[in-house]
Image (cartoon, rainbow, N blue to C red; front, side):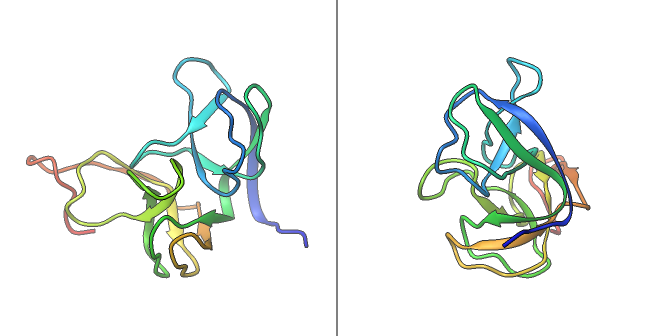
Length: 141
């Protein structure tokens, strides 16, 4: 079944093996242009659509509605970032909550709900970086 909801994807070089990471979050690499790595907690650039090995092309959705893998329970309308830890390694999505330390990269808003480990629809049209208050904490999310 085809999936297309006005998503925009780009090709990036995988600097690590991304096998088994389809629909998880990746980050732009800092060591090489046009490359990506698994996203660390509270970061993220886009959602991986394939499973490239090291030095292969990764297809990364950076805008539109995309399927994404939940690392915790996700509610409709929740602002989404990358979990700091989750079963199975990096790149899992989680909800931005009050009390997180920042800055936090908000990839978008959940259009559907999901249980941990399941797929949900992520609307990546509302992206932003959320910065902490003077105490270093995200408040009022």
